[in-house]
Image 1 (tube, one colour):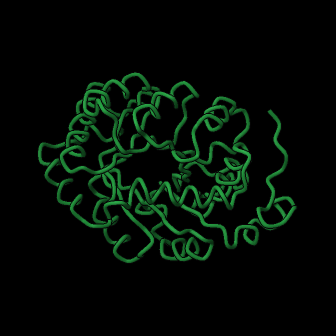
Image 2 (cartoon, helix red, strand yellow; image 1 turned 60 degrees about the horizontal axis):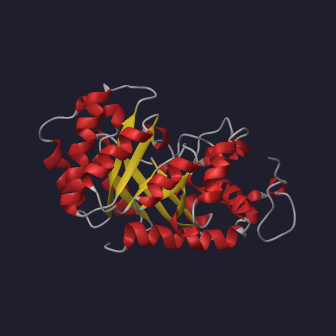
Length: 282
């Protein structure tokens, strides 16, 4: 399906003219990135300050290995608009130790750690054996349930297995989000039926992503989030560069275009969704 050029939400012109000026005054949220990674060691403060200038009301930085949990705390304690999540990524499931649960639980008590994640299953790369991934996923879901905290789910090439494990822990649904959604409309329905939000990454700006476009059309506005997954998955307009939180404007614009509403309106909706999911108990 062909879409017209991305338009500046405040002026009737192509966003390529000056995307920075276009988004002044539009509320933005990056619901998932990794500011704690080494990719930002040389300019982390500058990136965060620039994100604030570009209109980011909230950023959620997600630590996926034990070695990064402390850095997540340093970042969220320094910046009032940056929140954190911690969890053991499925790629690192093989590194799980018996004391990790207690370690995670200590971090979950921090007032600005608002989710456990990202956790889940990745049967595309299989950096950890599938059976180990399933075991660790179950352990982390049990921990999230005990601490009554939302979960951030990574699921790749593992739709049915992810749903099966979620159903065993949350038969009545659960507050959480399917991060970096890459499945189709039918999968979106299954996760939505189970009470999850769905977060759309910068891949929605790529070519030949028809099934993701159809999923975005289906997801109700009150259950949608947008993210960068920075430093990964840079949107099409900035391909070749490191991804940063304020590039979420490209994702917001494309999703708004697909949904047939203004980026400004979608920005307000996403802010509200982020608050409802992550900050009600903060």
